[in-house]
Image 1 (cartoon, each protein chain N blue to C red):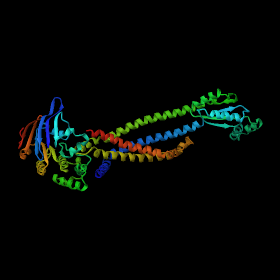
Image 2 (image 1 turned 30 degrees about the vertical axis):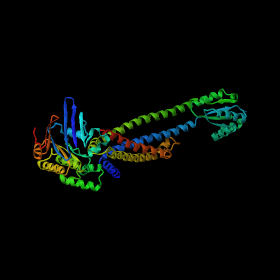
Image 3 (image 1 turned 180 degrees about the vertical axis):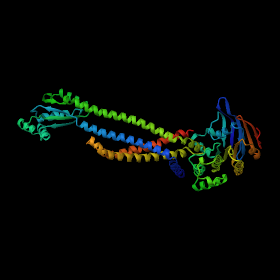
Image 4 (image 1 turned 45 degrees about the vertical axis):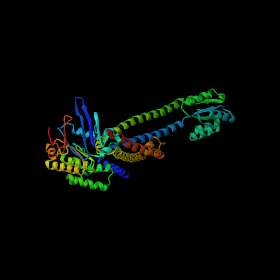
Length: 226
Length: 301
């Protein structure tokens, strides 16, 4: 479903963010990408979402080279991917409800569908009380949960979660991981980027380990080894 | 399709409500531009009408020798009217000239008494209006070199030349000043408008980036902002039209004191549909165009 083929990304001439990265992720897999800060986890996601272009190599999604997609048609790819951004990327002038509903509006869902789906994900992330609040009125953890709800609401084929528990307390961290596992059980491909040792060790799922922009391990039932 | 259009309208209304200050700034600047453009148009119309009035007052008279037959005079008139410089030619017989003189000076008893004693001293004349100011000299030269030169007693061009030249210098000065004013004000307004809209839409940068990343198409993102621009332009058009109508209405009596022949409000009324169209096109055009430029810039991200 997703394939990185000898991908290199160089931001500055002295250091490569990613170097000769190759791996495949099959449909319905749950894959964790681990590495220290700056290892290149976020760059991998940005390349898949075509927020960045590779210096060398190719990135495929459903057998299509994503960097050959016309700019005006990129939205079709992005609708298939639910992304939980590390910096949340919530629309500052929209309420919690509107932020989540926006993705449903984009795909042309009906008012009833939007209301039903948004209410459901808000219940899952435990933010029913905050529907009318703006992002600036939420705590960091609450913002992160809104970002997760937005990534799930339109039931995308893949969920990319970039440090989704980075600012959550242990209780909510566990809840979010359980939620990702549940979504995965329902047939969604999940790619989780984290540097949380406990999460990786408890998941016992495929783990790709990055160090200095290179894949140093790719284990079927990985553990956090760095 | 229908649902997307509905969503675009919903989002546009939300933006208008939420970005109240930015929308207000946009409406304000567009309204100023509409006012400036339509005021310049109105000023142009008024000055054109004043210039035409002034130019209408300019002519030269060709006085014909006493005793020239009407047949000869009409032949001269016919020949002169064929000259390309001549716009209008009017024959005033010596009798008519006398009547005009009497009408003008009927209260001056001394003049009237003298007139009775001398009979009719007035010469028949041809009053000529030219198309362009510099045509008067050409017409005067034409008369000097014509076959009917011997029938001409006097051409008053040379006596009136300084006045004619002064009038045309003033009208040409007004035209140049208007053009200069339009250029300066136009450039200033365009600069201020684009800067204000650029600042007002700078906050869109982040939102547009997010919207693109969560899968919105370019037109789904751009649509609400174009609508916001269009609605702001429409409101600006209505505001500026109201301000201009009121200003013309209240300034008319004051201007009448300076220019008795000028009615600003009548001029506004006569050109109402042109002003309406200019303001509507400037307002909505500027609103939509500036939103288009702003979103195009940020959609490249």
